[in-house]
Image (cartoon, rainbow, N blue to C red):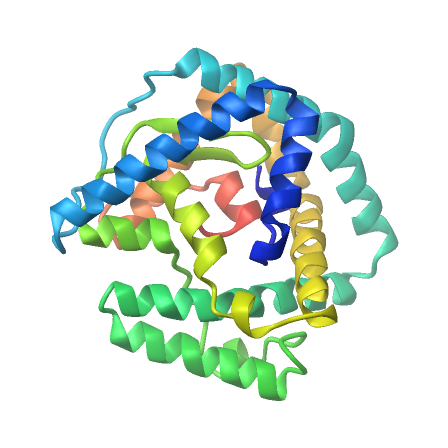
Length: 276
């Protein structure tokens, strides 16, 4: 579950250290496997050229037992820490403040999304998101207020996972990532690159960078609180929460990448943790 979706590359090392401490020595082995899979996806994208990959069908889950073990650990962490912390945050912090924090964190992600728009050769979307960023940064007090949406400039979310899809990289196998949750090999590769390539990671220093990181973490807790009923129904009320989360994630992700060509499904992970 994407609770710790840090906005700056300066915190990646601390993030990995935290996961290693939390999940023990198995994390090192997992990291090596993940990096291998990321490399394979990037090579596949380079070889494929610029023809969009077909939308995935069915479920490719060759390491299901390992994924289920990770899901159980994520679920236990949510129950012990994330859900109580998000409830405390939601109860203690007024709704307008939570909204402002979420807006600020979302605004910081826009430069990276613009870069992905350009890499996807979607120039109109790049211009749209650029104007959105400039408007919210200038007239929305650094992004605390979402004045751009009111002006018709909604957030056209994208990510490097979608860029890889446009470039022709296949979806790959299903993965459940520690602390992050449902993913695919392509999505996992995209997450790594998105963290590293956001231009603000290189342009912003000092307190503002720390504020961005803190806002991203707080926003995730706020989202977990806002959609608690939906997430709880999947994690704690489903007969098989792993299978349910996997199905909802794949359906929602494929719908997004298809541009609406497939039926729309509600995915609590997308609703809570934003774009892939």
